[in-house]
Length: 263
Image (cartoon, rainbow, N blue to C red; front, side, top):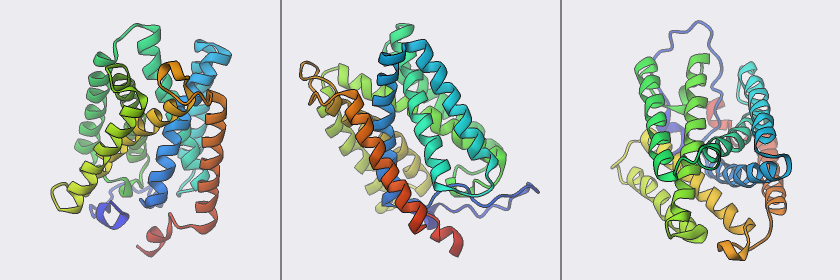
């Protein structure tokens, strides 16, 4: 699922074109994506524990708004801005799913299909409007808005799905194994021509959320809950450092923009 497979050849009709604002889809993309999901999971829980649920949601919403404002203000892909926005979406998406369950008492068995319906609606509106769901056609503000709406929905859906599997008998480590196996399905289906690149990409993108979140929860939570007991703060810090390291590498090496420059 690399760039050359998901480029969109449809002529753009907007006169306010931008350079494509998404990164090249490489192994680095998927590593950072998984790291952001786990970091967002534990950071959300940590903030709620330290600040309280309402202040944590308010802070998460402000941080998300600020990061997206920076991302929308840019007219080209910038690694630190893009991945900061993804991290903030991860934190806030986790909070959205948790608020429904913890705050409003909505079961994960209900919120998971509800978030799936929201994501499907975003995709339908996006495709009807733009005739493409390719992330490498994000060269207008409207397409960018659809993209980030889809990303937010995938994080909320993935959070609910991961918590659902963890609470119905799989546990956190079992959920890691389940979603690790599941993410191989779209990759193999695309590899052997059974699934187009765009569908394979978004399917894998959704699955990375419960995969990373389940792994981070397993590392952070106590032995009584089936985890390693490393703690929310240490796991959040460790995954944040890893994200900074990978994003810094990409910012310097430009490995995630070379295909764009050559296209």
